[in-house]
Amino acid sequence: MFTSITEWSRRYLGEVIIGGASFHSIMGLCSTEGSFANLVRNGWFGSMNPGYTAASGETFWFTFTGLALLGTGFLVRSHLHATGTLPASFGWTLTIVGVLTSTAMPASGGWLILASGLLALAINRPAIAEASSPSPVVSPSQSPLPPVRNSG
Image 1 (cartoon, rainbow, N blue to C red):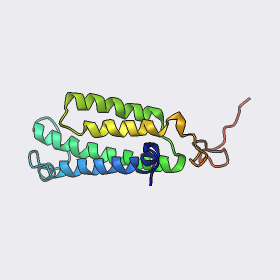
Image 2: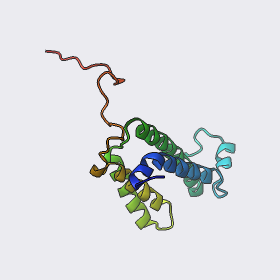
Image 3: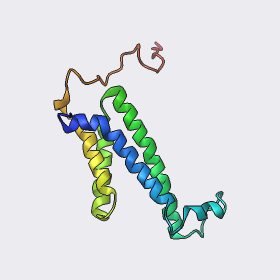
Image 4: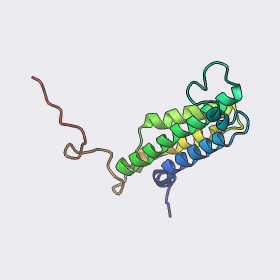
C-alpha cells in the first residue's frame, strides 16, 4: 500500500497522463461531427487547408493533442522510473495550464491537467528526501552523454 500521495504519484502519474491522452485521442477519432474518417476520406494531404470546417479542425486538434500527450505520458513514466523526480517546471506548467483551462472551460478535462500538475509538484516536495528513493543525480560513468573536454 502507498504511504503518501508522493509515492503514489511516482508510481502512477505517467499512467494517469497516458490514460487521459488515450481517452483524448479515442474521443477525437470517434467524433461524429467533423469526423476523422471524413478527413481521411477527403484526402489527407492538405485536408486542413483553408476551407475546412470548424468541426473538422476541432476533431483534428483534439486527436493529435491526445497523441502528443501520450508521448508526454511515456516520457514522464520513463523519467520517474530512471530518476524518481520530475523537473519542477513540468509540474508548474501543467498546473498553470490546468488552472487556465478549467476556469475558462469548467466542463472540460482541464481539471485532470490541474490534478496532474499538482501530482507532479508533489513528487518534488523537499520532505521526500528518503534514503529509499532513487537519486536524481547520474554519475559521470552512467551518463549517456560524452564527457566534456576543456579546451584550454
